Length: 166
Ligand code: SF4
Image (tube, rainbow, N blue to C red; front, side, top):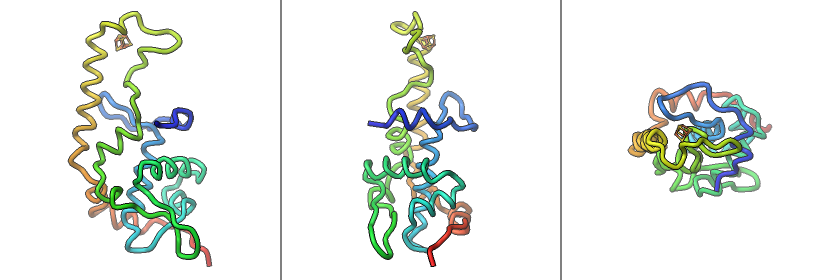
């Protein structure tokens, strides 16, 4: 179950694709996954380091990291040399699956709510938008997390500044 309070509390992305808008929460989670996907080359990172590298508040990133842990995508090891790392599931995860899990069951249009739309029980537009939403995720299904960090993205991720303890 997605924490709707967290998701709704963070502003939605400015970038749009037809029919679907990803929440900022999902974007932060995907950024964390991508950064950690290249971790094998520079070791585990803390949530703070991932947040700094991605230029976002650590508190927001912490919520995304918690959700990713619940999904089994990330694991955290304590102690010296510890930190966040992707699990086997995380490395092989489909991007479409991740987006579905992070976005939850929300619809593109708010048909229900305080002022529900009178057409909501028999709306062909609603069905078409649901289909478009599913098609959006289906487009991402063949992509894995590993695919996202190929060149040129991977080298850029590795070059992002992180503050390491002395
Ligand atoms: S017109 Fe259809 S899609 Fe739009 S709010 Fe009403 S039920 Fe939802």
